[in-house]
Length: 188
Image (cartoon, helix red, strand yellow):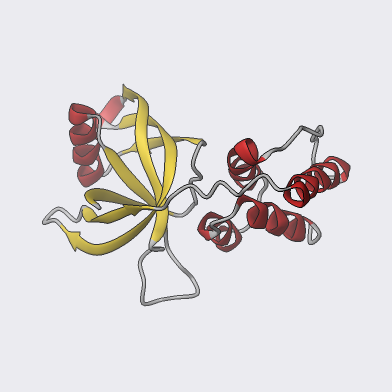
């Protein structure tokens, strides 16, 4: 576990996806400068949580790194952030300027075994996604090695609610994530 800065945002960032941000608050400008100085990581967490008024943010988020930055007017900083890996947060503390930090435990990548029924289900999901009327999706060969990245990309691109995206992020299995995406698409 590492102590890392926390950045609550009203969205979910998935591993393998990129997010542009404009940093204007002093505490986050300090965080960005520190991260750029040592190529550090931070954790993006979804906030606020409407269902839980006693919490300021979710405790599972995404380890992230800055992949590009540009100074802007008024001391603002434009950054591009890439999600790297899911993380669970504990031991949250607040600095005098309000910057949060916490103990970040990386959640391991769960590469399911390449079983015949698993492979067949991934192909079924690919075909169903291709047939969905709101998606311009062409069937791809999904396998155990790319199912994780594929499921995160889909979860990021489809306009699900913040709560649904958080549930998708928290799932340990790419197959479960893809099954839930299919289930959620039935409501579109």
